[in-house]
Image 1 (cartoon, rainbow, N blue to C red):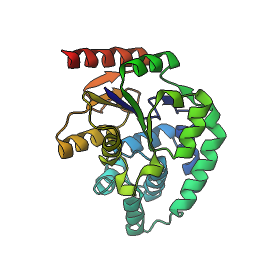
Image 2: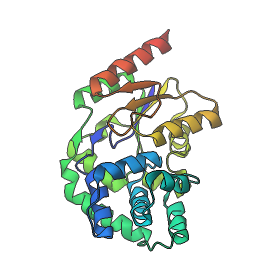
Image 3: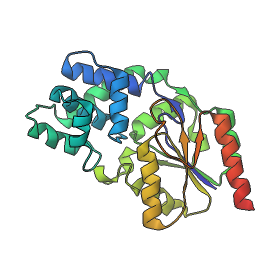
Amino acid sequence: MIVSFDVDGVLVEVSQTYHRALAETVDKFLDQPVSQKEILNLKAALKLNNDWDATVASLVYYQSRLALDEFLELALPGPPDYRKFYQLARQLEIKLPEYQEVKAVFENIYHRYQTQEELRVSHQILAEIRKMAGIMAVITGRTREDLDLTFERHKLHRYFDYFITEDDLPAVDARKPAPYPLKYLLAQTGFESPVCHIGDTEADRLMVENFEKEENKKVVFILFEHQFNQQVLADFRVSQGEELLTVLRRIVEEAQG
């Protein structure tokens, strides 16, 4: 069995780190307070997996002064990344900071809070999954630096064989929901059924769906639930590590016949 994990919202609780940094970055550029919940709902509605991109989208949304449904009608079409939001900003005559500045401000704020990240899946559960899985991997939108800082703090590297990060992608178009991260992983490991991906966003689900369409191979998608992903479809839904372990054991038993 091959098991790949998303990190944020799955392995790690990020409500006090990435979520906080997202809202505070938007606050800083707008020079006014915004609702963290509203921004996270906007990110989910736009099927964005990257917080830098979600920052840019939020800046356009708030400055457009459009109703949410009107904004989504304009912003949803096209690739789910920052480029279309810069294009939309030009159409709406909205001035945005450069993308590199957005990234730098976000990362500075995030690093102030990073030590507050706690595990959603315990070492005990990860050790049990490690016993079942021939290969364990991470597919994340984090940079390798951000991943390593958290993984070193929680001593997580030992459970995983492969790490697919933002730094491993050849272009923005290769980010989730593109199938590239999963294809890149399985090109290295070989496809050994069952293959499972555990994520918490529509981008994770679409990555799996797009991979299946291109490769005609089944990947089980397991959704790690929280308040912002109740609308996301999945083969299985879990809300804690113990449930995840039970589901993976069931998948292995069914595969063994």
